[in-house]
Structure formats: structure tokens, C-alpha cells
Image (cartoon, rainbow, N blue to C red; front, top):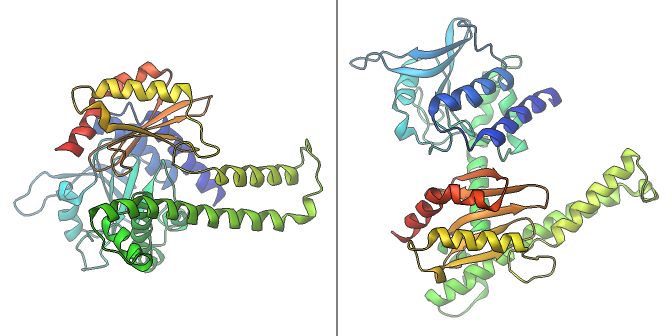
Length: 375
């Protein structure tokens, strides 16, 4: 498993490094899709008996349609892969070749990817019909370790289709629920807010009450997660009891583990997205970046609608002081600078910058997401 994770981490580093420069589908295939097939899944991309690029899928009146990649096993199509360019929204509605050919092929696994996000589908709901929801979603910039054993079962060396299919249904819904829960905790929906507010508040839930409880619910969710993480960290520290005697400056592996857990515990304690809270300081660079973003948006929306909200690990620029309307996130740790951009679907794109002036190069994307919010 360690070797598999190292190969996956290598491709993830490529995604992080190249994501801002991959502007075409072919560039995405070359830089990320082929390395993923080769390094992570373990197939020889130059061996046509294993990987067939531009696989022709003639179906009835549809002649000459092509699937980007067909992974073969024992002379039969095993996995179909349809690739889009980096950053493009992944939807089966825009992957008609994959949907149609899956219906008539031997394949049990269909994959839709934009290089960064990999959606794996099968036919749990109806035989030979691609499910609407993927059973496994892999984001190379935010890898969920829970999915790795299932992903490894799709690799050439350990391929076990029966095990993958057997676990797919539970994985499909558990993964989808985790994403929904994470989204609700980060930006609570009105339904989520009302559900919990009714249990603690006896008044009438008008629009003002919903807005008030949205902030309270968001804060409560963050605090709950932090409490759970801190509890686990304290347990980990307690488990290291016999090694606590290590002195400061001790370079032993045991001391390194103690320091790592202690540092993590401290960092979690200060996580809070409310500006002005203990442990959260908005730096001069963050304020300067905020002013640049406001300048970019001049003429798109009134400046009074653009807000900055700081957290311990990043700083957000949002519209209408509403976390559900993110514009840009700033990750300035003193050594490196990275910004995260959002599109209409709230898909995140991470971009390394060398100076604050580099933010101006992203003006079009910044304006576009704000225009989506206001129209």
C-alpha cells in the first residue's frame, strides 16, 4: 500500500504544479491522465493490448465516436475513461460517448475525469446502464484516504472487480453523504439550519431568524469538529505516555511524533473563521490582496458587498459577508503564496503565485464567479 500511495502522491503533486497551466483537453491528458493510468493504475499506456487511446465506439447510427481510453484485460474492455480539460465540470450529461458505449461493452467501470477529479462509475442501479452517481470520487488535491483501498483494487497488479463491485454500493452512498455533510458544515443550507434551530429555538423562524441561526449553526459545526479532532489528538498524546519524557530538542522518532501531535493540537485550537478571534491575525499581505480583489471587482458590484473574513489557516474574500458566496481564498504562510479560485459550481482551483500582482492575472475568473452570484 505504501508504494501505491507514493505513486498517487506523485501524480497529485503534478496536479498541484500544473493545474493552472492546463488549458486544453490534450494537455490535461498528457500531463495527468496518462500518468495516472500508468503510475497509479499500473497499465502500460504504450501497449495497445493494455491501453487503447481514441477507442472507436461505433453504435448503431453513431459511427466513429471515440472514447479517450479503453483499458483492456484478456482482450476485453475492462475500464472506459473519458477525459475533459482541467477545471471543466464533470457531468455525465456531457459524456454521452461514455454513457452510450458502456451500455453495449464488456466494461463494468466507467471513469470521467478532468485530470484533478476522477469519478468512477459502475452499474449498480440497472445492469449495463451507467449509474448517475459515481461510487468513488478522487480529488487529487484533496485525497480522502478512505477511498484508497478501493482505488488500489482497480490497479493492474491487484485488480479485483468482484471486490470493487461488492463494496461499491456502500462506498457510493457513504462518500456522497460525507460530501453533503462536509458542505453543510462549511456552508449550512436553510433546510439544515431550520432542522436544528427548531430543536433549540421556540420562536418563529422568519428570514431574520434563519440568517441568525445560519451563523450560529456554522459556528457550532466548526466547534463540534474541532472538539472531536482535539479529543482524538489528546487520546493520541495519552497513548504516547511512555515517550513523554523525551526532552526538547530530542531528535528521536518518538520525540518527532510527540511534537507533530502537539503542534496539530495547537493549530486546531485556534481554527475559527470569525475575524478578531484569538489566534487569527489578518496580515498586511492579506489586506493588500483583499484591496487588489476589490479593485478587480470595481464596476462589477458595489465595493460595500465585498468582505474579508479571516481564519487560522486561510483568509476568505466573500460576497455579501456570506460564506456561501466565496470569491477567493488566500493561503499565505510566509514561505509560499497560494490562492484558491471558485467557479459557478464552487469547484476549487488552486494557483501558486509569486507576488500579489499575480492576482490580477486571475481577474476574469474572479469577476465571473461574482457575476454568477449576482445574476
